[in-house]
Length: 226
Image 1 (cartoon, rainbow, N blue to C red):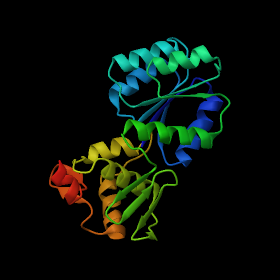
Image 2 (image 1 turned 90 degrees about the horizontal axis):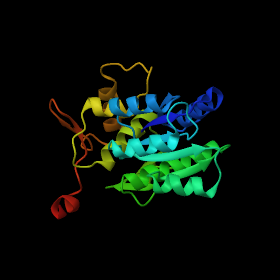
Image 3 (image 1 turned 90 degrees about the vertical axis):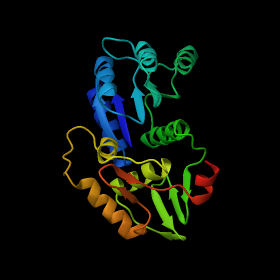
Image 4 (image 1 turned 135 degrees about the vertical axis):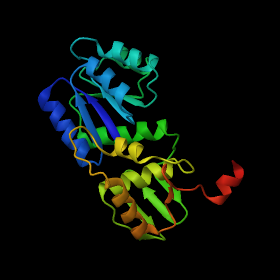
């Protein structure tokens, strides 16, 4: 899952980026609203962390512009402004949540998960596909009741494919969600992760659509209902 962090404080920005990366997210960090708008035009983000006290454009104005320009991912306002009117204005303006500085990184990660879950239409922190159970909060996977150790990238790919069952995701779409700026990506990186997932969870789980991408099919009952 790829996140855009907007924070002009170098120390706080770097600490937040590191903390979220350790929680399994790919994090791009910008320091102004203008840079955030540019990043959103160029990349797809599941979640945006928006500081209100940004240089240049005010965070509330940035929030309004992001929504008017069609950004439909989760937006969490992260700010030192702790007055109730500020919170109301942010939530009414299109934010999904509001967290006050200073904050605990574990709480921030939990709020990110919650906002992204709502944006994806999930009600719980657990996804089930056949005999596979995905614990989104703890980033753990079980198959037939047995734990299956996955790397961070493998977990993220599995989560994306299960969340979008029935859709074909291209290699480029998967890379876009997996890697942040400055991360080197081998040309066959996604293919290698897919190979490892098949080895651990079964060859039939992930279907390759030639020259298009990868997909996990919907269970038969879901496909019949559709």
